[in-house]
Length: 85
Image: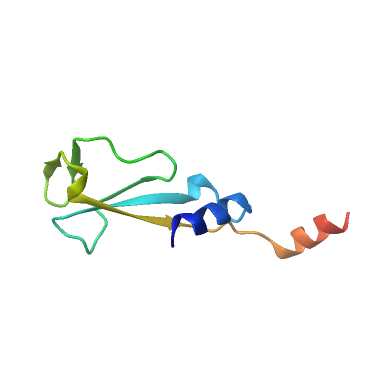
Protein backbone atom coordinates (compact mmCIF):
# COMPACT_ATOMS: atom_id res chain seq x y z
CA UNK A 1 0.00 0.00 0.00
CA UNK A 2 1.40 3.39 -0.87
CA UNK A 3 1.06 6.72 0.90
CA UNK A 4 -1.65 7.97 -1.47
CA UNK A 5 -3.81 4.91 -0.79
CA UNK A 6 -3.43 5.42 2.97
CA UNK A 7 -4.42 9.07 2.70
CA UNK A 8 -7.47 8.16 0.59
CA UNK A 9 -8.63 5.61 3.20
CA UNK A 10 -8.16 8.09 6.06
CA UNK A 11 -9.77 11.05 4.23
CA UNK A 12 -12.75 8.96 3.12
CA UNK A 13 -13.41 7.85 6.71
CA UNK A 14 -12.58 4.18 6.06
CA UNK A 15 -9.59 4.28 8.41
CA UNK A 16 -8.04 6.60 10.94
CA UNK A 17 -4.52 7.55 12.00
CA UNK A 18 -4.86 5.49 15.18
CA UNK A 19 -5.59 2.40 13.04
CA UNK A 20 -2.50 2.95 10.85
CA UNK A 21 1.14 2.22 11.63
CA UNK A 22 4.56 2.93 10.20
CA UNK A 23 6.41 -0.39 10.28
CA UNK A 24 10.15 -0.16 10.96
CA UNK A 25 12.56 -2.66 9.44
CA UNK A 26 16.23 -2.89 10.40
CA UNK A 27 18.97 -4.16 8.10
CA UNK A 28 19.69 -7.01 10.54
CA UNK A 29 16.53 -8.79 9.31
CA UNK A 30 14.46 -7.22 6.52
CA UNK A 31 11.88 -10.02 6.60
CA UNK A 32 10.21 -9.00 9.85
CA UNK A 33 9.30 -5.58 11.28
CA UNK A 34 11.54 -4.61 14.18
CA UNK A 35 9.00 -2.08 15.44
CA UNK A 36 5.98 0.07 14.65
CA UNK A 37 4.84 3.57 15.53
CA UNK A 38 1.50 5.30 14.90
CA UNK A 39 1.21 6.64 11.35
CA UNK A 40 1.50 10.41 11.18
CA UNK A 41 3.97 10.81 14.06
CA UNK A 42 6.96 11.01 11.73
CA UNK A 43 10.01 8.78 11.66
CA UNK A 44 11.54 7.27 14.79
CA UNK A 45 14.03 9.42 16.63
CA UNK A 46 17.67 8.40 16.42
CA UNK A 47 19.35 6.68 18.05
CA UNK A 48 16.73 3.95 17.71
CA UNK A 49 17.07 0.63 19.56
CA UNK A 50 16.48 -2.51 17.47
CA UNK A 51 14.83 -5.21 19.60
CA UNK A 52 15.85 -7.91 17.09
CA UNK A 53 19.63 -7.51 17.18
CA UNK A 54 19.71 -5.45 20.37
CA UNK A 55 21.83 -2.70 18.78
CA UNK A 56 21.50 1.05 18.68
CA UNK A 57 20.81 2.45 15.20
CA UNK A 58 22.31 5.88 14.51
CA UNK A 59 21.64 6.18 10.78
CA UNK A 60 18.36 6.09 8.83
CA UNK A 61 20.22 4.27 6.03
CA UNK A 62 20.02 1.14 8.22
CA UNK A 63 16.21 1.36 8.40
CA UNK A 64 13.40 0.87 5.93
CA UNK A 65 9.71 1.51 6.34
CA UNK A 66 6.29 0.27 5.29
CA UNK A 67 2.74 1.30 6.14
CA UNK A 68 -0.06 -0.85 7.50
CA UNK A 69 -3.68 0.28 7.62
CA UNK A 70 -6.65 -1.30 9.35
CA UNK A 71 -10.02 -0.34 7.92
CA UNK A 72 -12.80 0.65 10.26
CA UNK A 73 -15.71 -1.71 10.86
CA UNK A 74 -18.66 0.07 9.32
CA UNK A 75 -22.23 -1.16 9.20
CA UNK A 76 -23.51 -0.71 5.64
CA UNK A 77 -27.11 -0.52 6.82
CA UNK A 78 -26.28 2.36 9.13
CA UNK A 79 -24.63 4.26 6.27
CA UNK A 80 -27.61 3.70 3.95
CA UNK A 81 -30.05 4.79 6.67
CA UNK A 82 -27.99 7.90 7.40
CA UNK A 83 -28.00 8.88 3.72
CA UNK A 84 -31.82 8.52 3.48
CA UNK A 85 -32.49 11.11 6.20
